[in-house]
Every structure is written in structure tokens, then in C-alpha cells.
Image 1 (spheres, rainbow, N blue to C red):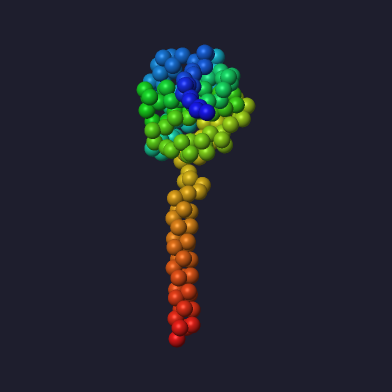
Image 2: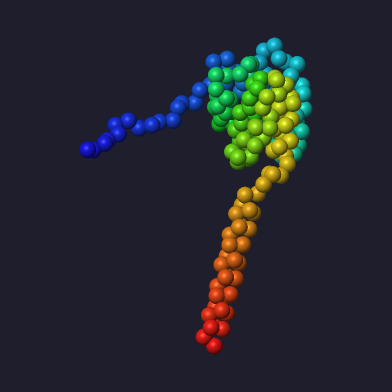
Amino acid sequence: MTVTLTRAFTPMAAEIPPKVDVDTVMVDLAAEHVSVPEGKYDQAAPLQDIVADARAHGIPLSIVVVEGNPARESDLRDVATEVGKQEHGTVVVLSDSWVGTYSDHFTRARLEWAEDNAKYTSGHSAVAARIVVDHLETAEPVSWTAITCALLVGTAVACGGLYVIKARRAAREQG
């Protein structure tokens, strides 16, 4: 019996939430690197302060706030990626409960660490943005490269030590 696959799995296309107009977002970001939906302009000033602080610390940050929550949390990352292709730097997209990011400066792992800590702030965009920036400005919590190197060196030392012990034992038994 022969089994053949006639269909290939393809990734889902990026989906921008229907209430988000990327062109309007890009126009908003051109001035102060902050885009907020109509009716939420009171959120712009605190976000502009956070952007200015991040930029002063070398993080080329842009913040986009969207209304409500999209159908999927990953839609926020899609918005961030779409904006990041044009804006470059680090883009943070905030909804009422979720965070999506894109960066050509930070690793995906670092971004997700910051995202996870900034979720569920009940629509307080400035609080979520501050959490993201604080996490991006601090050192990574764990250096997996250093841990891996230490484990490899430890394993090599243990193997070498066992070899020396076995060689001495064999020499004593023969002598």
C-alpha cells in the first residue's frame, strides 16, 4: 500500500484586524512614533513619553494601540510585522488584553518574554508599554548560551576525570 500526500500544509496568511488601517497607523507614527485609535487620544501623551525614554536608551520604539482585542492574539504580531517592515526598529502593538511585537533589534525570545509580562493590563496601554520597555532595557533573565557552555565544559571535565581515574586504576592492576 502506497500513501502519497497531494496537499502541502501552508502557513496561514498574515491577518490584519479589520479595524486597523496600516496606512493611517504609518501617518500617525511619522510624527511621534505613537498611533492611538480615534477617541483614545488621552493615551497618546504617556505613550509618547515612554517612546522618548526608550529612544533615549537606544531602543528605536514605535507604539500602536488598537481598539478591543482582535480575533486572535497573533493578529497583533501581524500588525507589528507589517508596520515594522516600513517603520523598522521595534514595534509594540497593544490591545485591551494582548501585546504583539516586531523588532529588527531584539530576538523573538526576548520580545515574547516582554510580551508575556505585559499582557492583561485591562486596556492600560501606558502600563503595558512601560512593562515591555522595562523588560527590553534590562538584561535577559537567563543566558542559555552561558548555561549550555557551562554544561558542555562540565561534561568534558567529568569525562576527562573518569578517563584519568580508569587509567590509574588499570596501571595499578598491571603493576
